[in-house]
Image (cartoon, rainbow, N blue to C red):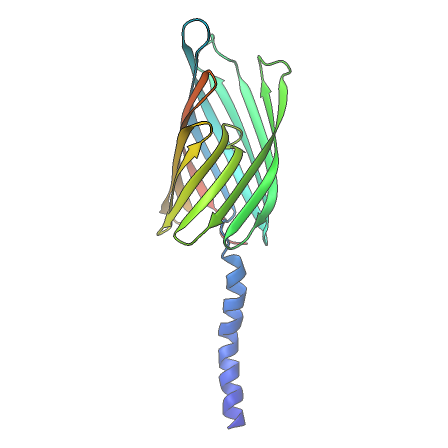
Length: 216
């Protein structure tokens, strides 16, 4: 009888160890690389007539996890489609934080360079906090999407490997997004927003691809 008990415990031990090692890896976010291109429209209303610009905006981002320690970086280039415009701009951002099974927090800084601004370089903070309630989640961001969105609060839905989001952009605006699997670790990412800030209006639609590096 003692030998039978020892055999049963030995047989059950690998399953217990497997469950204990897999649970910490099931984190809210995983390592990924994404690249896409967007169309950014900006409109301005002053004392005179209303005018606007259209820009092409390629963007590349990456996220890496070591355990729960999370590092995210990205670059964004905004290229005008006409000469009479606000000029060329470049943004680079870096955040660090922690990702758990139900929550993720990352904070950092953005460096923005503009060909027409004085001073040419501006620094901004960046913050993102996400929490997963199960089927639904919530995300708060400050100067998110490489500074394109000043502040937002969005609801996230995860369903069968797909992720959808819909949210409010401060002070007056909306944003929406979708991550759709294409097969293997490749995915399609769609993002869009539109908001009004003082006398300015902004709208953007971005289409890109993602590569999911899996849990670490």
